[in-house]
Image 1 (cartoon, rainbow, N blue to C red):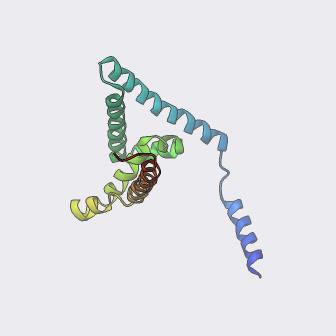
Image 2 (cartoon, helix red, strand yellow):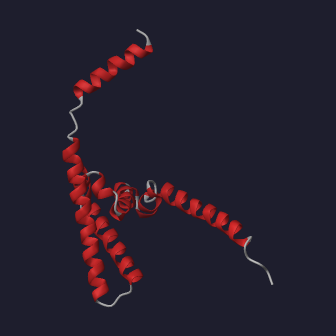
Image 3 (tube, rainbow, N blue to C red):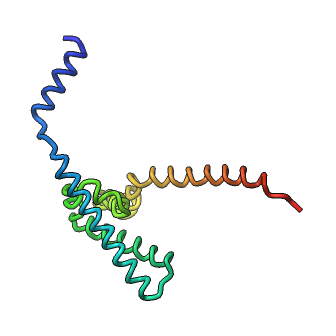
Length: 154
């Protein structure tokens, strides 16, 4: 049997064994759960603005609150259930980032707080942070190079 036939045979086997994915249902659940998370954030933002906070402080409060709620729900193992139900709807907002940091920390808690929680906390989020920071530095250098040409030194 040549490799192409074995791949096709395996694909037929997997297609027969794998349950069909209800795409419309999954999209609908992702849409309304993600919308609910964003609506909660908007409600908190409006409350903060009514209390006299400036827009930047209000946005910071919303971010911190959504991160804290997500971390708390991850600790109770509820966020994973929400994620299975809603898919990307629960992961696209900032709550997904919080979950990606807290989940490895919870998983390696048995190894101790320093080597387990502290060492493994950024296994998923670490590459994202490194890429984001590196990209920001590169873009900043490019911005600096192209904008210093128009500056005249006196």
